[in-house]
Length: 195
Length: 195
Image (tube, rainbow over the protein chains, first blue to last red):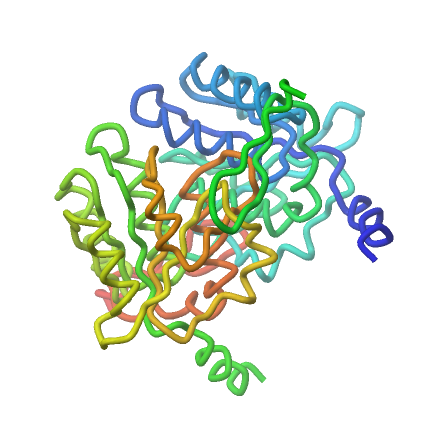
């Protein structure tokens, strides 16, 4: 059954999913931003774009995890996130509009929205820092909340990606040096380089 | 329909869900631990127990959010987390064993496990710091992974709680001073104190 089911699920995957992290502050946000990028990668996004402070160490962490654990995952710094979003809303690189999803505790309930979200075009998921400019709310095709209680951009992104593409994306980490084997009792790690 | 459906869902809620955060380091983990506790609260846990460094500021953050946004959420420091777990595995406070769930990237796949997990007894969800003692794997009734790629204890906890109890727990934040109203376009905040 799985073999027949998977191709259908695959066609549900958007062409490309990027996460845009606004307002990164090198000292204060170091580990949260690092976890945010790893969450993006583990739950099936193709890329994280870092805005705010330029922080080489964040990019290094993400690249190093991809090298060790496989898959394709891009990361880069963006010094003009608003210009980038304005452009993306008109042209995702092929002359046609991309889809912008803004995760915010002020947004519409994700359970209500997740099945309605278009996924036929490249997607940018915007994840705020402290103060998100009003223009981001306006540029977004969807302002989405994971509950309307304060929690974390990391859990919000994880839950949203999981519900949108997680199941399909989960097993697509080819290559890499090591692989964790799921186990009820403990640590089973395959070192692929030894084989 | 909703009115009929909700009581059934409610009976699916475990008697009590606590999150035990191991190995907190006051400086390095400050904001991650803060986000972890807020995630526990927002996604329906009843309590977070902080082990590692005693950190009053984390407890203050959680209490302050509960005061402003409502609901019941407890937090405390635990100086002997392993003793606590040993005891809980035998006696959850009423002379009968509690259920221990350990979230770890080495664990069994959560999609496979989540429907099998017992929820008829109080639950402690253990979330690691860097080095989790072997004994935690052994004490746990379930070692569970949210994918076997490295990401974040914050997103792992969020996804797990969401899948286990999130839907039922989401609307149980009574009281508090402010409430966010879900909105497609932006910020709608009710100040309950004005009313």
